[in-house]
Length: 130
Image (cartoon, rainbow, N blue to C red):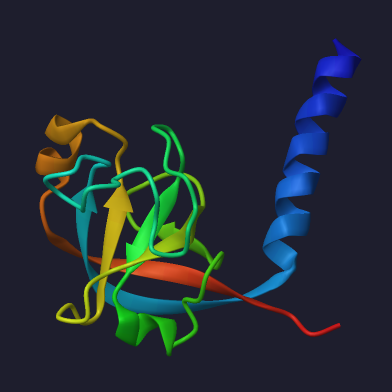
């Protein structure tokens, strides 16, 4: 039983270490969802604009290009209001979108439609200088 307790504490410690490596900034954005399907993206729906491979289950987001300039650069960790876990900026959206994120939901079209479009607060990590 003590081993299980130590593992639990170890996981929390690792999570805190990750959290402490960043200064977290907040921003209100419009959030939509997308799938890695050709009709929603392009003829190669499993590759992001940054060249990363998409696989169902990954916690990735695409950001509008104006957010890139606000600090949501490639690989930035992002916490999204209403969702668990940390997502990472791995894709960018078309120039026409402003102040928007697109949450990757694998091939689950139903989940993406259920999410819809909503205003959310996100927190994004800016690496601390050491």
